[in-house]
Each structure stands twice: as structure tokens, then as C-alpha cells.
Amino acid sequence: MTSRRKAIQSIGLGALALSTLSTTRSEARPEMPLADDPAFWAKVRDQFMLAKDKVFFNPGTVGAMPRMVYDRMVEHLKYIGTDVADWAYKDDNKEEFISGYNNLMTIRTKVAGLINGTAAEIAMTDNVTNGMNYVSNGLNLQPGDEIITTDQEHGGGLGGWQVKEKRYGAVLKLVPIPKPMHSAQEVYDILVKAMTPKTKVLMVSHMITGSGAILPVKELCAEASRRGIFTVLDGAQTVGQIKIDVKDINCDAYLGCFHKWMGAPAGTGFMYVKADKIKDIWTTIASYRWNQHEDEGFRFTQRGTGNFPVLKGLEASIDFHNEIGADKVYARIKFLGERLRTGLRANKKVKIFSPTDESMCAGISVYNVEGRTGAQLQEAYWTQARMRPRSQGDTFGVRHCTHIFNNEAEIDRALEVVKSLS
Ligand SMILES: Cc1ncc(COP(=O)(O)O)c(C=O)c1O
Image 1 (cartoon, rainbow, N blue to C red):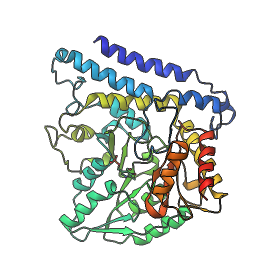
Image 2: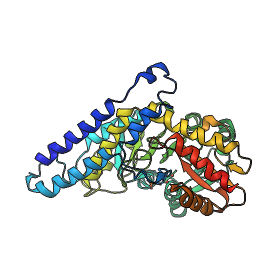
Image 3: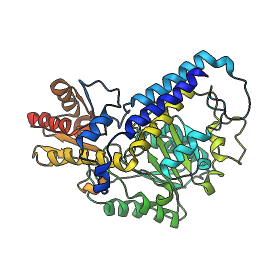
Image 4: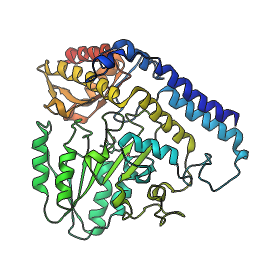
């Protein structure tokens, strides 16, 4: 029990440290709270474990953990290693030795708070891919039923629907959308035009992985729902980057992960399905609770022995995020992303694949330098400046993510690297 108490205290200390950060500017400029206050963000940067001699620009693949996330996870691992004999094996859902049988109500409630859902609508998963497969596998579709999506989806969002097509004769339509996109209206019109009376599912990324485009999901879901289409959003790139309100968006399902922009340990995700729809989704991984509907989220969360320390790290990542505040996190990410894109736009040798409409962008910028491949650009970043954005292949250059642990000087240095190549 001693180690466990220590784990709880370590979160308190982390939170206290962040609480000491000044908030005066946020009161003065509520529209972009503290986004350009270097002193505030330098203190936030100090909460991360990232080595100071390298610059990380790839939380779109896997995030960087704040120290309190690491501490909470390791403390709990130690607690289990030391005190597993304390486990009285009660079936009261409060035991924290293995996950997969526990209803995880505390964590599900925090996740629900993050996206404005309810705990009953939240199931814990390992990642977006398995959440998406729970939805695609759990919905009944008939041969000829259409699933509409875009031609810019990630394989983890798409794969389950491809199985649905091959196995059950559903028709998966990969609707081409522009890259770069120019407006939300343009994408909306293309996707709505693709809907037919046979369309049963609309599945799109809330934010496109290979361009950072934020799609007009609220409008798309409204039109799809009006036509009786089930709406599913892939939120792999949004959680911890832009604010999510599932009630406002009014989607039927939303899949997210915490190991990218939230800085949680790898292997942490969630499935949200709207209260009046979740009861109709078949479970994919079945255990005792597979058919018990009094707590729908638990029905899917009970999926065999899992790793509790990882969930403790996840919980700490939500505490950390909330301590700073989703608005401030978004404002800073957007501020740095915009600084990068503004610099890139001034360079005539650079082609940007993120939307030309800045209101569709946040912290992901995708671009290339004339005559270069993504691999060359990635290599130049590393050899010249120990910076790590991620290659997007021969045509699309690199995906360059900006997060709260980055700063203005790093963006400006990145622009110099690009200039040296152009
Ligand atoms: C849009 C999108 N969907 C799905 C995934 C897969 O996420 P996960 O590895 O959590 O399953 C990614 C990963 O980069 C992604 O960007």
C-alpha cells in the first residue's frame, strides 16, 4: 500500500508544479491563452522527459511522455510487483492489479470528460485500430450496403471496413478528396455527393493523418444522420491536440488514442459510441459481460487480462492535459503550427499539402522541398539539427507536428534547415 500511496502523491506534486505557472496572460487574451508566452511554455517543457539535445516533431506517430505519466506508471508497476499478495480478489471492480475485468470507471469517467461523453458510452481499448474494428465488426451490414470514406484514411481506420467488404459483400467507397484541401465546404460537398440511399456508414478521420486537415465533421454527421447513415470518426490525431465534443459533433461513434498527442504510454485508446446506439453493437472480444447491457462501456472494456500500470500512465496524461487546459494546449499547438506554415509559405521552393485554409489546420504540417524526397528531408533534419519530423514518402515530404513541448526557436531553426535545402 505504501508504494500505491506514493504513486498518488507523485501526481499531486506534478499537478502542483504546473499550478504554479502564471495564468495572468490567459485572463488578458482569452482567445489565444498564453499561446505565445515563452516563459509559461518553457515551464511546461520542463515537465517532459525528452532529451534536450534532440527535437521531437512526431507525436502524430507516438507521443512524448510527461514525467508524471512515466512516474505514475512505474510506481504502479512497482506496487504490483511488490504487493500483488495484497490482492484479495474481490469482485467489486475496484482492484487495480490487472485490467480487463475491472469496469475502470474512474478512468472511463475522465475519458468521457475529455470528449464530453458519458462513462457508459466509453470503452477502453488499446488503440484506434482495435476500437475501429469493434465498430466495423459489431455493426450488421448486408451485401450491397455502402460504407463511404475518403481516399486519405489510415490503414488502422480502414482495415476493419475492408474486411466488412470482403467478408460480407458490403461496398466500401473510397471517395477522392483534394490534397491540399482548400475549404471545408469543398470536402463537405464531395462527401455528401457520394452518399446514396444504399449508404449505411460514413467513416472519416476527424483530422487527416497525411495532411493535418480538420474535416467539417459536425456538418457531415448532421447530413449523414438526416439520411439515417451511421457516422464513425477516426480521432487518432485529435485527442490532446484539438478539443473534441462528441455531443456537439453528434457522431454515432468516435475512436481515439492517448499515445499520440496526449503523451500517454503506448497501447491506450478508447471507443465512444452514443448511448442509444451502443446497445446494438456486437462485441468482438467476448468475456463474462459480453451480453450485459446495464453498463455498455464495461461490456466492451471486459476483454481479458490487461496492463494496469499503462492505464495509470494514461490517467496521469489526462490529469496533465487538464491541468494545463485543453484550450491552452490547442492554442499553443496551433500557434507553433501556424508559425511553421507561415515560414514555409514564404519559401517558393516549398509545396505544402496541409489545407490552404488555415482554419482547417492545427499542429500537423505536411510539406516537401522541390527536388527532394521525404526520406532526404527527414535525413537532413536529423543530420543538420537533430530534429525528428517523419517522412511521408517520395511526393509528400515530411509530416511535421508541433506540440506543447516545442518552442519558437525550434520552429525557426527548422525553417533554416528547409532554407538550406531549397
Ligand atoms: C488517422 C489515423 N487513424 C488510425 C491510426 C492508427 O492508430 P493506432 O495505432 O492507435 O491504432 C493512425 C495512426 O497514426 C492515424 O493517424
